[in-house]
Length: 269
Length: 75
Image (cartoon, rainbow over all chains, first blue to last red; front, side, top):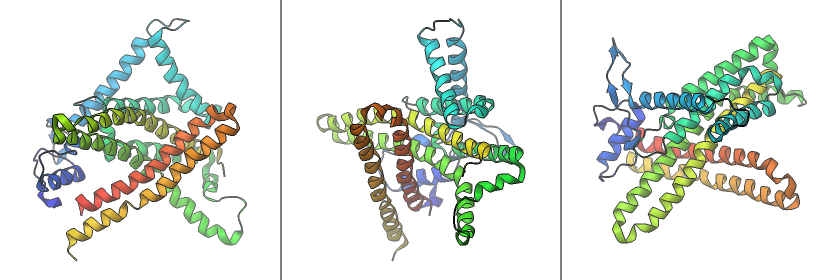
């Protein structure tokens, strides 16, 4: 089934395979079509495919929107903020508080990175809730790249700050010595699976939510004018839930980054 | 057994993970409500943690979904 991928414009293994599989499974409506990556401006350098895709377009839109929002909202720099300025200050305060509570004062120097991460994921998620948009956070490669940056960055920070004593992170204190070899292996494994769980959490949430919306949207069409109201009401409720999830997942990604950073800086165990 | 049938059965089995996730989410909100009734003043402080726990638990269900999708469409 996986080999029968049809769309020639499709990039990416899983999405393409899913697309092909569903098309051959019959049924005109395909809830996974929305995740298809299309080349907008094909760029090929040697064997490298560096095409400008719809995914890249929406990443650019997200970055442009964040820049516009923050610069436009803060243009007056009023002592008593207006509505827009309050929103910008609120998002700043939100992330700053998160770092203060989870990492402490030493985390302040990492604020720019964590704030950027939060805003990028938040705008990516929320942008995807608009009809006819593309959710770039619903692709594992995007979220995995973000998670890999966090993972490598945190590990480097840990080694730079503590040198070899950073490895103490993998040795839990206060356990019987005969259990130590087993626990160290478990700790190392759980440390190494962090980028995977971090990225799959965000990607799976976004993908599952958007697929569910499309599936219920399909029910509305299938049941027609008379019976379609029940699934339509459900879709409305689900959209509300999904907007909540969009915020929540950005928050979860950021707070886990803070917790990992705290581990690297303070070596809690 | 035909490979296609085995694939479907495997994907169905992957959804068993939802049982554990159901217990987990029920635990989180049940304990939150119980705690909030005992000490309503402290309830807003822990609500962020409740949502974090909910999101982490829900992610486990989605890992199962990813496994089911991989079984159905990739293999």
